[in-house]
Image (cartoon, rainbow, N blue to C red):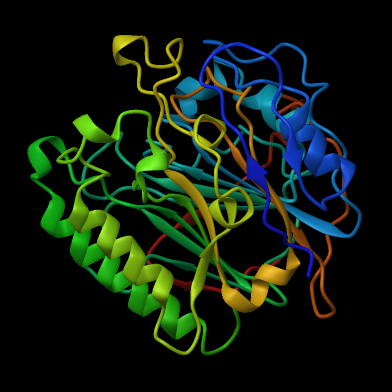
Length: 354
């Protein structure tokens, strides 16, 4: 099995790099061993810390950009160029329509957008892919839950990727009931997909599942994202339908990781500089896919374009998978992109075409 549990001793402050005991390759090990958890407030200018991907792996990225327009002015495009994933799934784009000229279609020819219909400048998801999906679906099939542009499902050769921005329970938990209805609908949706092939459920899932997943659990027990209701609901999703479970890949690989796992640092009260974070972003896989999980990496250094940092999954390729030609991202402002027209997501099924 490729995925093996690793134990990580945490240090919330500056100090020497931690050590990791594992059987993973040097790419995975380097990502955690050689750098302490940073607390920078702006995006890096040097991305030399991003190593080449392991051989024969898909590289998937999840990133809550907290307004794609704003993030693009604060280093998102430079990050994307350096990361060079096969698929990147964005949450909270806040786009009212596809941003047609943002990313080159020469590099990411398959681009999908699901924009909020409920209100402008709110929520929204997008996926840019080098791999041609066999089908694409927007939403969960529920009119009441699909008006905020929160889900895009891509069918690849041996798995589905369900890219998701889970609703926040809101200030004073005013949307907690909607959130729990969402989780129930998502659990049923994933179960239905799993009848055909396993699933990678990914994105900003808006839950810190365990006390280790946030810096201050004792004072956040009734805060959105850490209520017992939301945590229990996420546990139910991980349990699946009883025939197969689902695995939180980062926590499986790094059972003791605390600060190194945080993916969100709010803009208030100097949360980033004080390393007061939450782990809200996930790659969850149907259990049969676990043996193909090579590593999950929190890009701790990549803070500043958003209040989240990107999360990277390396998934071993398998017979039956479609491939992608690897290339560097072309400057999104290039004249060559003048005819780039991303697909505008609407609820329902789409069979992608060239």
